[in-house]
Length: 207
Image (cartoon, rainbow, N blue to C red):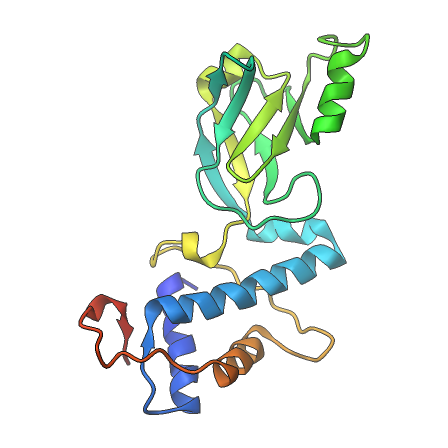
């Protein structure tokens, strides 16, 4: 389902709760994003591999920071952080050298590898570290840096365009709550935004 359709469905649910209410598109998007993020976190807790169904593919460039002697990629979109090393960047790949493999790591592992006797001995693996704004690499080659990388990321609802397809997890939690149920519960507890003085029609959602 595309993003705009999901927003319309949520608006219809809101109208059933309060036929007189009007909502900002931003407000509805925030409700949807909160529900989707919660469900993705719950999927991660069940099995991190479940997240691969909800990744978005991004082709990104690799830059070089000479002062620190490191290669990095600025995150092309905001990501949903997760507690493991990969965080919201679930996979990195390249078409430049198919034999290379990328593995998520943390800075302690990178420091240990740099200080070991095997420094620069491993030639078919690249470590990547995810932080809030970028992905840092250890073992990156000039050939791969020139061609760029392919990332599979988990991004929040706000990062999708209205025409993008957004996949919704199809499961119920321990309370039997589906995505629709979660949306209804949040709409029932949060009052609608007052649009009486809002002249920006682009931010209003109507039937």
